[in-house]
Length: 422
Image (cartoon, rainbow, N blue to C red; front, side):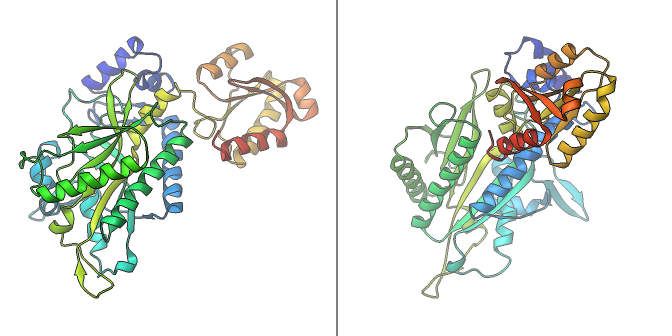
């Protein structure tokens, strides 16, 4: 474990009870390694399970909302980022170039230039727009060691990223609203409430700072007015922050606070008037003329690592059944109950339920306590009566005893709760 990460995890006992760094250690979700490097999290089996569920959920949801999911490389020629303009603006937070076959390559810090190459694969018609290109993209950024903090700020992360190519301002405004609708839908599934758990911030550019921001005052005014109008029409409250925009345009940031009370950006929706020019993105309009599109950058859940940190803290480690890495622990009371318990475990696993069979030599009381400390949603106890009745004594983490249920009743209960994401 790196000295920085080791120090952070060693401090876990002094952290707030719901701090994700403390819970990540207690619940065995993630760790760090000195040989791997600072800010590069390693996912333990339980944390990897939650991550996998989140990734499947977001891909399936985005496809249902009209996005096309793609795969692009984690590395590209440095020329790609010089063309996009990212390199001069962000080179200090990028990893050093790698020389291969006399060309300089770089671990990618963002996905948009890759997606533009997909768009440029062939000529495009206005009938194809809006085009929503999405990807679960591995990105790499060099964060200062003093900025690293558990999963909230890391050097390697997976972003639920997308770029929407729009034909005009009207379509762009509609797509911004649709992106916010998707974010609010996903947040509601997580049990997050707008105004309580997260809020909107309109991040603006600075017209006087052309070193940090792409110089085009009219486009900045137009983009900021469009995003402000979308937010006002939603009739929700939002704040404005000068100097927080991306270099290529203004953005709507979805803000959250962590267990320490520090505010972080979780997701973003960005208006881009710069990249279409830099990459010469065009489409053929209904009048047969070649025209320039507008690009909306958006992330539905942000970086998987960061949203994991927020969710660990939001649930205080007690994940709802659909996200729980172990949904049910099976507890045979004695040796003679183990054969039946193993059969139950196999059948539930075959049904897609994530179970754990605890056949340790600890007393039943100790094993129950361990399961509750691990915040496992369901405890399934098997004794003489259960074996005789081919049933299970079912207890819920929060609701207490649910009585004796058959295997089929138990399976249906867990499947329904998982399906409904309760």
